[in-house]
Image 1: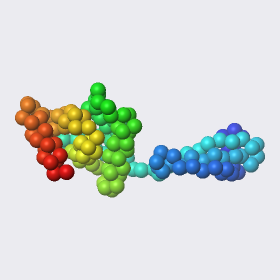
Image 2: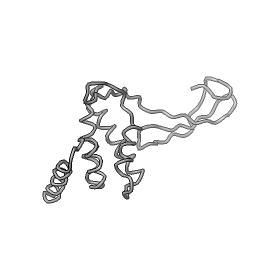
Image 3: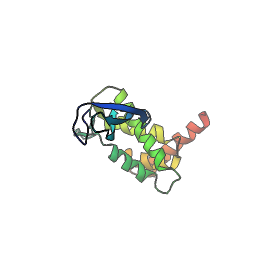
Image 4: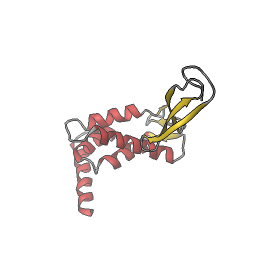
Length: 154
């Protein structure tokens, strides 16, 4: 690693620390030439995921778009930003674990709903109403019945 000040090739790692739940490593380095200290980050580079939408079009997976949908579903609920970040991270992790470069949007929606349901039922129903495109009250009633059945089964 070159020194960011003098561009000397010889730098020494003086401290390493896991960050972002073990997803990257923060390294403090020192230049052997000028003793300048600087920080670098090392993370796993993952392949970009392609989302296949319902109409057949393809677009790059966007964590920001996923978070936007979660924030809209969770407005005026007690769910914290940290919880939403954790849900988004879990969804992204599961998508990468499946090892497929192209993922159907239905799979993403189902993952989100599976993770959102135990956190907040209102947010879950809001997300489901957009994701499943409820046309009338019947869709809501079916979803609420599913939630009630799951409660009884637990």
